[in-house]
Every structure is written in C-alpha cells, then in structure tokens.
Image (cartoon, rainbow, N blue to C red; front, top):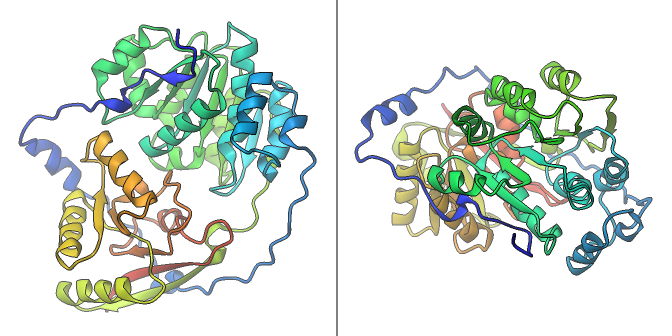
Length: 401
C-alpha cells in the first residue's frame, strides 16, 4: 500500500470510442424541450450586499483530528475555517450525520473530507463512498482529499465516465477504502460486481440537488441501498427541496442541519440580455462583448457538443484565446482544457452545461448564455460561475429579437 494518499485511478487514461459513432451523435443531438423563461428573468441588477465578517468559533488546530491531518492542514496554510467548516467539522468528527446547506465555493469539500479522513485513519474497518454530479467536481474532491490525507497510506479509486473502465477495474482489485465517483459509473461497477459497498459506512453526497436535477435519483437510491446499515452520512446541497429531503430521510439518522447560505448565488451578478437578429449578428455581438473592457475571463454556454466546437473554432479564428469543453471530450482532454483555463492560458471557455457545476475558477468575470438554458434552475447554476468570493460578476443572455 502506498505511503502517500494517492489514487491508482483512471484519471490518467481514457476510454476508446469507436470511429464514427453515429448513433451516439444522433441521440445526443436530441435536446429536451426547454422551459419558457420570460426574458425579464434574465435582467437583474447586482445587489449591494454588505459583507459581514464571520468570526469563527474554532481554528483548525482546535479540531480533535488525527495529528497527520493537522500537519497537512498546517502545510496547506489552513488556519481559520469557513462558516460551513467551522460548524460541520466538529459535528462530523463526533460521528453525527450532517445536512449542509451552503453556496458554491464555501469550502464544503474540507467540511466533509476532514471528518471522513479522520475516521478512515483511526478506524481501519471503515470505508467511504463519495458521490458528485460531474467528473470535474469528483476530480476536485479527489485532489482535495489527497492533499489533506497525504501520507496516510489510504488507498482510493476515482470512478468517473470518460476514463478507462479497464484501469478502474484494476484499481478496484486493491479494495480501496475511498471511492469517489459519479452516480452513473459507480452504478456500472455495482452491476458488474466489481464494486462492493456493503462495508461502506461513510457516505457523502455532494451537490445533491444537482444530481437529482440531472436525473440520478434512482441511481443514488440504488447505490445507497448497497451501503452498510450503520453509517455516517454527509449531504451537501445549495437547496433543500422535497426531493433532497426524501433522500435524506430515507438514508440518514437524526442528522444535524447546518445552513450558512448568504443569499442567492446570483446576488452579486449583474444580469442582462443581449438582443440579436440572425446568426451572423449573434456572433458579432459576442465578439464585441469579448473585446470590451472588463471582460477578462469568460465562460460561454451553448446547447450541443457540435455547436460548442463550432463556436470555439470561430472565436479562435477571430483571434481569441478560446477552447471548448463538453461530454464528447475524453477526461484527459477536459482536464487539460480546465487547467489552461484556470491558469488563464485561455480566457474564453465554450461549454455545454457539463461545466455548470463543479467548475472551481474564482476569476471568471462573465458568464454568457449563447443559448437559452433548459430551465431557470440551470440558468442559476450557470451564472453561479461568476461573482464569486465577493467579486462582481456579469451574466449576459442572448435573446432573439
């Protein structure tokens, strides 16, 4: 077993796709009917919300966690916890089930990773399953856990689509104690018999609401039904609607509810529409937005893989530092694009809604809805990529005049 907490996962490989997968292309090109959203809902002034400085009850060094975790957190310059961390970590370390309601970018990963890793280190019989809605978010969770748990000797596997199934099967033969994945791929392994969760007594569902929005309710229910009867559960979500409550009530025991939402994610975002007539006018208007003062890093949402590729190529031909991300790209390609975007090697990212959640880039100035979102919730998820960490953001939605 490795002396450093590291995943022998499929992050390094990709699955091969047959040439000319016509049937797959036809299936993906069928878009569900969009909800009608009145254009007025895309227009809203940013709210001048007063930032109240949070006074934490604890420092990280106060938490009763394993010395190795304390040392790693010091090396990572973790000193004062965020509100969700301050309230969730002590409860998690005490063994309580937790329901955390918090905005994106509030430090939720460390809020569950620290109690989870402490339990795994101190209880050799424990095993964890962490579910996330997207590959990107699953990878970010894996990276954070790896840093916090460095040197623990814990073994893990990252089970996500777009990565080599063969490599994942190989990793699972080592009986890893941390499983991080997306619901679809985790369910695939359960059905194959390559994954056993009957001994998984630590459960994390991150961004539960988004997973349910994406249609994973049955997959989640089936996955959790395979876990240990006695378990500690962590549920993190931006909202707590009836669907989320149903999952929690079914699979948790007397959870402590922690809410640290500070208003809607979109409060700090200036929102407006961009009227256009015809496709040529549309791309020219986009061009003007991207060269305007203040547009330093933008993410542009479009409907399909094909339209995303076409728009990205058009912007590149116009001299923009642009690239694309969508479900048709392999995981290594998506990782490479996101690394370049985070490092500002590219400043324009054209994406399908696959990037609407789990994209942790703090300096996006503009979200541009080149195509209308499927639902208003999708719109809120999209524009939540900007206006983060107290910085102003701008969301522009193209509407045909």
